[in-house]
Length: 197
Image (spheres, rainbow, N blue to C red):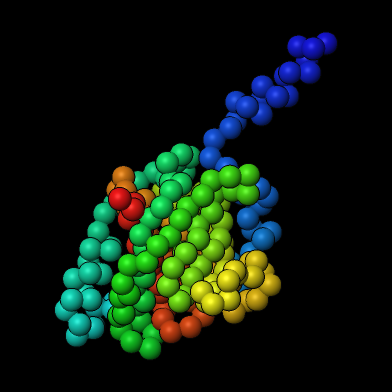
């Protein structure tokens, strides 16, 4: 009898890995955000083309660094939690290319799932990562907010602040989080993350 009682616990423990968010992702996303992810590749290509029209040679060189690296398998990674430095490149839109300086980000892995928080700078984001059908990326669902606001609204409360994107690993200590069709300023945003030393 006691042996049977332990069986469900053993099955649960056997499946323990990174604490991804629970539930079906498709049910959590708005129709607009599903559309943003569906057009990810075409928007990305168009925005990179627009960015390469920039006259800012330093920004173009930095964009080349940000885009470097081949995506690696990220699903099941157990070492993403920790402190990261992060910077954002905005491609297309108001200007062909703008690259911001480094700020601080943190990835945590707990009962709520694998989460990202940009913890410095005036423009911030906070959200959760979900497994994707493609093992080389995770889907990000979060919200944008300003530092003075203290904390973000949960995803789904304000469509103007909702964010979706894909996270890829491009090295042992480098990640890229890419946001298709942001609400303001640009066609495509890329957040580069490097492990803080």
